[in-house]
Image (tube, rainbow over all chains, first blue to last red; front, side, top):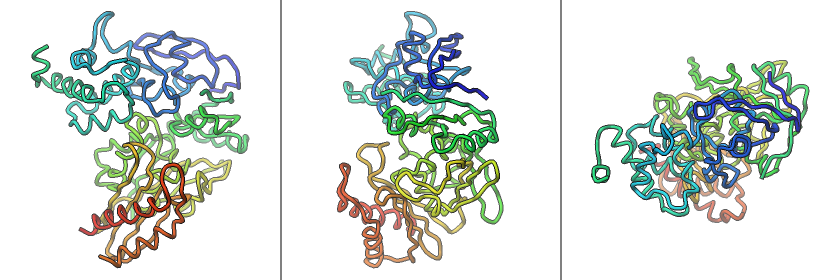
Length: 173
Length: 275
């Protein structure tokens, strides 16, 4: 049994994008704040702080979750993946990120990190989604720039490419 | 928006969680998926002194079929909504739940939110309590000293209010399995997909009658048993029930709009079960 009292400064250790990291925080510290302020991983954005907007979505043990509705103490010892870990190396994009770029699926980019983490988990579980299913999954994210059309295109294009069905847009790129 | 400070305990077993509940009184709150509770804490609508995090308790993390005369799907307190939703057999086991899940918040929230947590939270618009009531399901409450099993109808007592005592854990909820000859339908109206329902309805039709349940109107989900009516007789019965729910105006919708949704959506789900 783990017990932390009010206000105690706790050391939290987690595997962030495959790397063991630790920092200190209070029991009440949200995972979203811990990532940004404790570990300096500012790729995860903080929007509404009550689970509605989706900007802070990260993966906990591979599962897309709201970092603002999770306490840092809850992920002690677990794996957390954020947008910083999507591409294999520095200055590269993953196939999903590349599809977002190609399709102009982001404008201001505030919501994008969360959306990418949702899509990454979703496509692993559902490699060949319909457009309606992609839109349903995206309903957990607010984007005020794009109107979603290009995000949907980017996700479907990534799925098609991974399944070896190259779409015209991808072929042109 | 940050939660007020609290003590945090993460027990390793259900017994440890129950001992903590027994010793800490009403100021303690169980934290499971946190998809309702954390939002409430962030907005400081609640300021518990102790959070008991059961999300990693292995003996509460299960989803299993209990066979027998009254077979049911047993869902433990730490089991996420996603772990039920993504069961390939769910559509045969509890078809009403399979229909309701896409309406419950969003993919990212169902990944972490628990079924027992939604039932314990008892939001009058929530889909999981409504389905539990429509199916005549049960809630298992456990203390250090023992368990009691309540019918959903007795468990839900009002807006965010249940029959749970401060030292009790909602250990398990039981959704009755599909029965041959019964048909199930669910739908809801919300302003945006994934929002809380303004009105949600479920119908369970068997040879003897129809259990018709409505959420989002009264202070808790409510159910009525109707004979197998049709046409204007059915409309009349749904209309009477819509008025019995004593809808109120609020900033989401007027009482009259809610009654109209009950009439329209109610007729739709009942007809779907009788088609």
